Length: 241
Ligand code: ZN
Image (tube, rainbow, N blue to C red; front, side):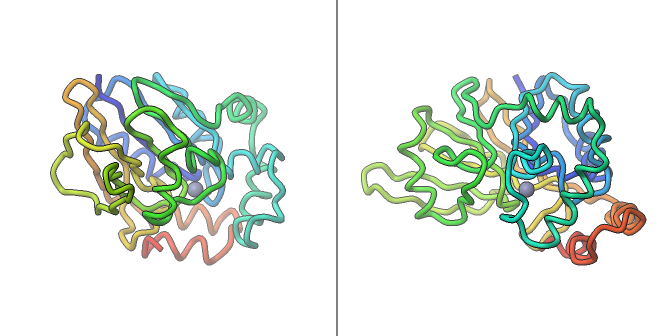
């Protein structure tokens, strides 16, 4: 079985469509949360995801839109964008987001938006934080999003430390080490590469492939301008920061 792995779409429908067009055939779509927030097309993204056989998780922006998180914990731009999203969300989209779990175990993978120990909130930004999270799941591999940076953290169990691995060009064979893997962000990459980031997971061959695809950033930016979304959020899409 082949799975398309997406995270942090953030209402960037143009980026989502580019990923769907670029992805090889897949049987299931796993979405690691933050479908909405920041971007101009929240309802379109929520609707599109539901067209697929889908495992979808809730992220912090999804929860904020539902009023489950205090917006005071967000920075000003994120707060402005989330307040706008709340005003736009259809009852159907709201219902869908309301039903999403925060974490799940599927086919030997633990999946969460943020981290195993804090599924909605914690940013696994370095090897130390990754190391502290391995005891919080039982299966070999955990998939998370949230930081918008594609990366692999690999546990060396004998020495009880973690290594940070940059996304390899070639598909990675899974199964040798316990891993925490982040596919990066579809709708707002932050690793200096503005192309949409995603991954393919093959459960038969047990391989993982990081992928990037360019999309029409300027169309998303134009839609954000038309909706009066914050300037900084518009500008950052062009540089992937
Ligand atoms: Zn996010």
